Length: 387
Image 1 (spheres, rainbow, N blue to C red):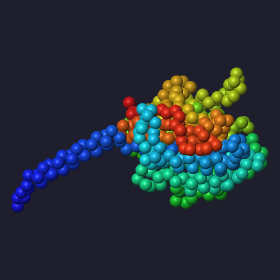
Image 2: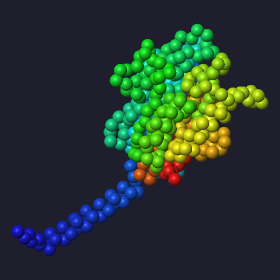
Image 3: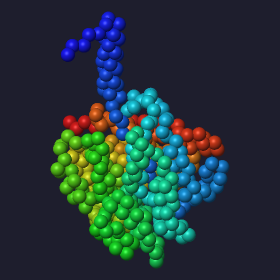
Image 4: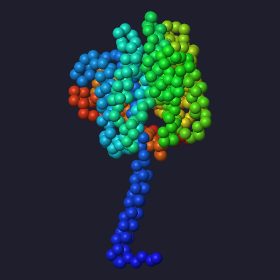
């Protein structure tokens, strides 16, 4: 059957087809110009159980109140315009937050009158789980990733310098059950420091995110090797853990009272007599060699020593070239504990298609007496391509 159209209808149809083709071309162009972005919030060292000296005109403010204020500011990030800094998504609106990552030290070490880890864990759940109202761009609730810090582990196993310290594994056990999702949930009674480690992975847009228990010591690297070996060599890897890439000597296993025995690796370095502190050069050497063997490890995020910093880790023998991102703490920031305007978290914007990642410092308390949202500070963009 033939369909005959009058001249007016033919013109209307032609206009419609042309408009449709133009619309498709614009949509295709927009897809190439503005690829899907994965947005991730990163913060660390909540330290529930201690007080902050000054906060928004008040003194001795509890960790619960400060972290609640942090989450309230984070909840305002949807709709914020990203700065024109050459980074991923510059000048566009934040349409959703896919994940929030918390880098450990949920509960401060239980010294003196500091509250039990079980109380701190309940406060963390109130703020970071129940209080987080963010959603991703598809409308689903923002995912939460957590790793333990040295305080969470020392609360679970005890601390050498605190005589007769009562242990409370609640925070570590809570992190373990939340992230590892064991068929039989871990309990405070069944917790075993030698076997229960928070190590897990998440593949996001072809990027392999790895979450490590405290620091990649020799024992952790056995697990990490087993995880990385099956990956295609070109798969970019990003590591999140608590300790800085240099490690911290006192966290290793050792006989002296200065050691906290939080890691499985025995400390084998020497005391630097000139500087009167324990070095970690020998411990780092194994980690440095590991980075050389796995050049697809492209970035490393950490807390523990807390301020916003973007830097390169080379290792004691200068063989590595690792992009590192250090994040601030709401309670124990090196600089923000003295100047609350410097309180910050990080917004990680990932472009999986073009393998670019931008980290932006988000100052969340820049006007402390009258909070009005987030001010962007420093930013850094890296490429995740593996040579």
